[in-house]
Image (tube, rainbow, N blue to C red; front, side):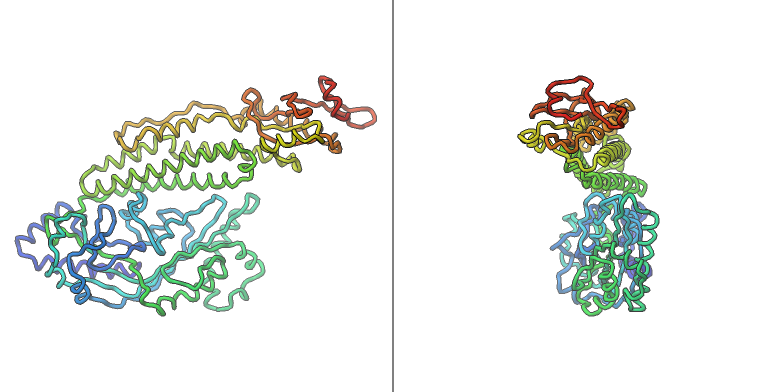
Length: 574
């Protein structure tokens, strides 16, 4: 990564100047004219290999950032005989505590153009570059990455190949814009350290500890004592740290813990030296084909940097929303309340479809813009549609934050009723059919299945094929302000009263084996928030049951009903 800078100036620049000097004066004039008109298309390009099998002489299409297998300008014998190879040893270690695509691209020395292709799904990464796909799955997670890069050799084509093109007809196929003229080989490895945390833990403290412990790995390795150097507190810290390995080197076992990563750190410098044949392309240099033949296909235009940055911002927003969704989906409430699970599944389904449709749109327009078939306005239109759609970051976060608030409120009520079983509809029916149970008192959440207008907007957008039309006239989606049930102060007051009554009634009758107290969720739009349902002999007799607390002179608490009902009196104790 670092060595490539000086290497690039010697290898690729001299290669270009030598080639141009050997052309005739008229040809040189034509090429210089092209250079003046299209500066990007006429310059050699340096590209990260990203685990792709690239080698000198391979054809490459910069419009789609893809290589062309099985097609070459030269025969295999010529490529092997005239290849210039030299050693290029260099080792680099780096650390990163950011998980964004921007930070990862910087760490891996990925160009803005290649990053755009990755965001648009044009580049399929492999080997160590799969690190790009490894994103945090939760907001309750801190991450630090240790990056290792070692280069071993540099290979480049010579002028002999340029003067003796074996298959000139390849130029006319126009499937490629460049040819790989040089490759830097070596190995890369990423050790990704994660530490999850709970709401009760000190987040700043944990983040600081993770950074310190990962950056101490080289120190532990140098002194060679491992755990012997660690304090008891440090040993406790590292037990909570997990590790994921992405690399081109082949350790005996991929590390999954901090201590395994420490042991691998000590071995990394020797792994490539022991097996130099395992070196893979780290970086390649591309030479424009139209400088070899003016009629060859070429890169007409690069994507504007600001547009790439805006695209990345949108993708980052989607990743953040996905992390929040993941946290919600792991909540225990999802498995006990089917209405909540159904809502989350519907959101995930729509969200995944949107991501796929968006990436397909980017995959379609990026090569077309670079090849001159479309204007940058096509990409601008896509970004505008994203910002104005119901999938924009603001609306996604609003819905997810509302869900978090709802989960938090439900959890607080359930915590106050600790020990009471939560039953779904099937479990409740089973209890109602139990002949030993005469009376069931159910603390019922009644608003978990309310219709969500936001889902209608999501599904309506997905059916509209907006990314196919790209007319740029998409207006910002507006949502009528609908108060959530948990934001209504009247509902809050009623729910608090119901909770107090339910707990008091439970305490008074906890030894009565013929009574059963449960928690459940039954949709009842006319009775928002919660209610106490009373079932007698398996039948629902009251959807707003309200037992009342009465204080007697003897200081004992007795319960009675507002409306004395003979059937109820038969099954309740006072």
